[in-house]
Image (cartoon, rainbow over the protein chains, first blue to last red):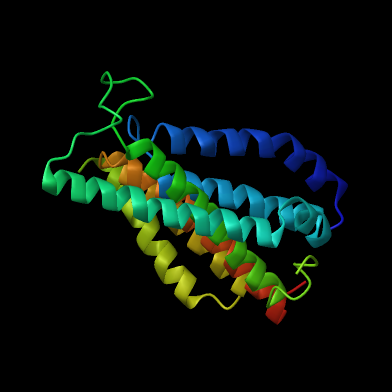
Length: 145
Length: 79
């Protein structure tokens, strides 16, 4: 899409959308929102960047193998931490993080790291789904492998 | 159930029927987006802001983007 108006308006709008997405992810245990909602907002901002600035610029900024590594690492850590929470609650282990004071950002134990991991996975997955809808495959999205 | 909720529900029913009956595909997608946005307002009115955020981001955002990309791929948009 070669539109100067769309480029300038989205250039002004994208940082606010991404900051709002990160806010929804980070404050998911205190206010409405969470990993899925904030991750979908972040993914929508990445899809907007791809459709406005073109596929080449977006592939340069969001590299395919890099994003895939982030998503897989987030999934593995999600499994580890969630499994630790389940097993630790069942066996009565001591919680190494602690609960913190109610209402502060670093409270709620493992909920905020899990929200961050879920947000990363959901944002990257939505971006990949939109890329698949547009391109059909990841044929020339990965020049490094 | 006050008057505003009933108005939003009426818009949702009309939007659902119109999205199924219209011949213009891009118009159907936009009507579906309006339907989803009214659903988000109704979630907020029923004290479920978490679902409202998710509905507004996924239903009115991502799904409509994917529909419009698909329309552009199959050249279903009328000029």
